[in-house]
Structures are given as C-alpha cells and as structure tokens.
Length: 186
Image 1 (cartoon, rainbow, N blue to C red):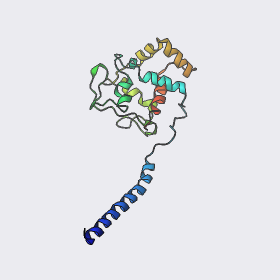
Image 2: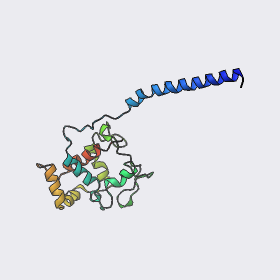
Image 3: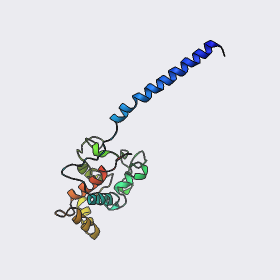
Image 4: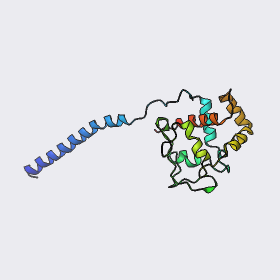
C-alpha cells in the first residue's frame, strides 16, 4: 500500500469517526424533546383511582357495550395489535365496515383533541362517539344502562367507585376514560 492510499484511508476513517461522534452527541437533545412525561395527567373532574381504572378496563373489554353484544372497545383497539386492530378499515357491530382505520389508543392522555377531526375535547366525551355510531358499536345508551343495571357485579362495582352516582352515562365514560388515559407507550 502506498503512502497516498494510506493517508486517504486515514482521512476517511477520521471523517467517519468524527461524523459518527457528532451524530451521537446531537441525538439526545431531539430525543428528549419527544419523550412522554413521567406521569399521566388526569383532569380534576375525573381523578385517577385504582377502582375506577379496574372498572374502566372491565368495560373496555366487555362486548355488552355494543348493540349486538358482539364487539368490545378492545375489538378495534386490541392490546396485542398496538391498541388498534391491524385492519385497513375497522369492522363494527354486525360486521359493519367503518370508513376509517382504528387508531392506536397509546398516549391519548396528552392528546389536545380526539377523533379524526378533533371534535372531542376529552377522553370522557370521546367515549360516546364510537359507542353510539351506527357503523361502530351502534349501542342504544338506554338499553346499555338497563343491561349494565341488570348485572349485579356492575351495580356493585359502580357503587364502590362512584358511591353517590352509581351507573350512569357520565360514570361509565369517566371509568373508560381513566383506563384509556393509562394506555401509554414504553
């Protein structure tokens, strides 16, 4: 190997080493900017409790929340699929094909607005859109309240978590929103 080739290789190695060092030093600042906060925020109107979280999880996985009792929230937001369903278009109650994909639920605690067009300002208000949409869960809320009210385990769980209110549309959405807020990435 001649001296010119040796010098050229040494320069190339120096440049590669230097540029990789610069890159390695530059990455931490942008990475920190995109890290999620250490704690999950809960609104004052719906503070976190372990009981509310457990009730929300129970409701989230219960197919009785759909009109035909055939799908749950977890059908379209499956934890095994990154809190979505892995389909191009969601399939709702009665096999109704939805117009959109089911988005992941990860990190919604920090979302400023929800749904594809931002029309739901909170997780508590967002719950009712898929629950009642004809191509999603298609549930009649009066029938849902009667169905949950006929289940003694739900009556007791709601009474324990919401002693003054029991089963209602507001307490149901508060419980599900509490569970969904805790779905966070890594």
